[in-house]
Image 1 (spheres, rainbow, N blue to C red):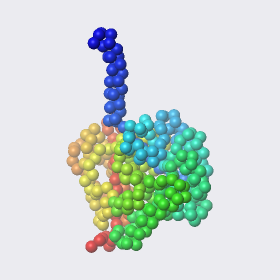
Image 2: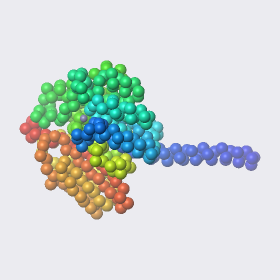
Image 3: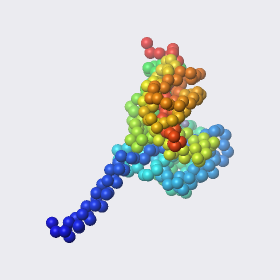
Image 4: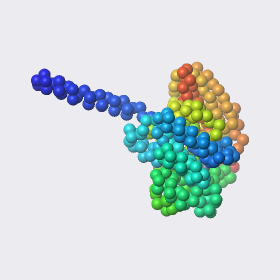
Length: 353
Ligand SMILES: [Zn+2]
C-alpha cells in the first residue's frame, strides 16, 4: 500500500472508529426515564393534586428551556426494544382521570408547545355522560392529533378490594370487567390499540398485574416513586404524582434523580400479605451517605455506615390496602437516588385456606 493510499485509508477509518466508540458509549448509558402524573388542571384548584393552567404552562416552559424532550408513555414502552431511539433527557407527561379540563386547558397548551402526552381515562363515566369528564368526540380529536389515550380501568375503583378473598370468582370476574372492558371500549370508540394501563390510586398487587397481562396490557404504570431505566420492567413503571406545592426546583430534583440500587428482601414487590411485614432491604451503593424512608405514614432517616440489612418494623398499618415504600438516598454531593416498591395488606379473614 502506498503512503498516500495509507493516509487516505487512515483518514477514512478514523472517523468511523470514532463514531463506533461514541455509539457503543451511548449504548451503555441510556437516559433514565422520569414520568410525571398530573390530575386536574383548572383555574380553580380544590385538591393538592390540582394545578392551574398557568402552573402547567410554567412546567412546559421549563422542559423547553432545559432541553427536556416530552414523549408519550406508548413511545417509551415501544422504545424499550430499541432504547437507542430514546431522546436525550426524555420526560413522560401523563394526565389521569379524563377530566374535561384536559381538553379545555391541557390539549391547547400541549399543541402550543408541540408536545405529546398520555391520557389515562375511564370509559365508565364517559358512557354515563358525566359532565366533568371528556366526551368521546373530544377524546377522538385528541387521539387524532397524536395524543396517547390509554386505560385507567373501567370505573376507577380501588382494585385491591379488601372485603373479598382474592380467589373469589365474583371478584375475579369484576376485575376482568374493569381491565378488559376498559380496553375494548376505548379501542372500539377511538379506533386505536389500547395497550397501557395506569392503576387507579396506584393500588395493585401481583394478582392484579397477572390479570392485567391476561387482558392484553403491555405496559403498566403505578405511582410508586422513582425514575425508570430505559429497559425497565414494562409492567412496573414508576411515576411521580405532581401536586401544586411541588416547586420547579423539586421537580428538577426528581427529573435528574437516578434509581437507588437496593436489594429488596421483604416484602416482595406487589406481594399480597395478611399480616404486617417487616420492611427489609440491603443497600448496594456504597456512595450513599444518607437514606430517608417512607412507609405509608411513617418517615425515618438512617445513616448507612455499613452494608447491613436495614429492617423497619415500627411503621403502622391503619388500613387494609396498598402501602408504598419509598427509599431516597443521597450521596456526599447531595445527588438524589430513589427506589420504591409496595405491598397489598389484606384482611386476615381473606386468607385462602
Ligand atoms: Zn385516577
